[in-house]
Image (cartoon, rainbow, N blue to C red; front, side, top):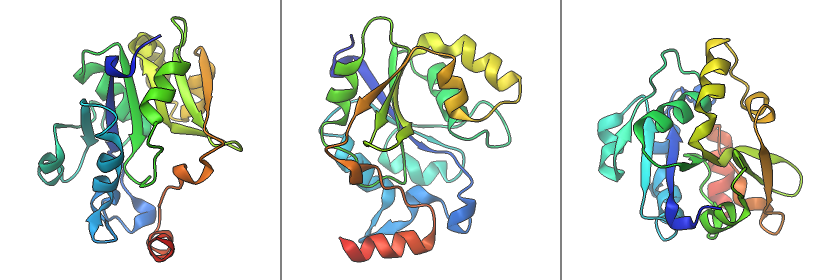
Length: 194
């Protein structure tokens, strides 16, 4: 089982944001701050190792920390960021969160790490109703499976997870922590509820 200190975390901001009108979701403002600032604000007290996966606006993202892009062209989705992170980072355990999830749990890193055993490949957050496939902690040993999966043209993240020793981590006590904002309308509605 990894300790929280033995994990590195990556904020996934590498998508096309087509539902956000092409605006880079991590840089869209929510209550006067870029959305990624909300994510960093929650993660930074939990871990000292945060990097950002971004394929656009890398210079702007670099003001928030170290940035790397996908190794695979054509925006392969979250799996592209996961693939790039395993190549970019040396850590055995790497966690991932999306850039458009501004209310992540304040105990995310500890709970995810504590749930893992030596044979866990992937731990995925579960809000009590659904798994949250982009809120995950995984062991780098999945890389061969991930590369074969991507080479086959597959992109659906949960299908890869089913090929691995996956566990879910219960966050049913914080179901609203995983609200993600994909459209300008969702962003506006969410901002009004804060």
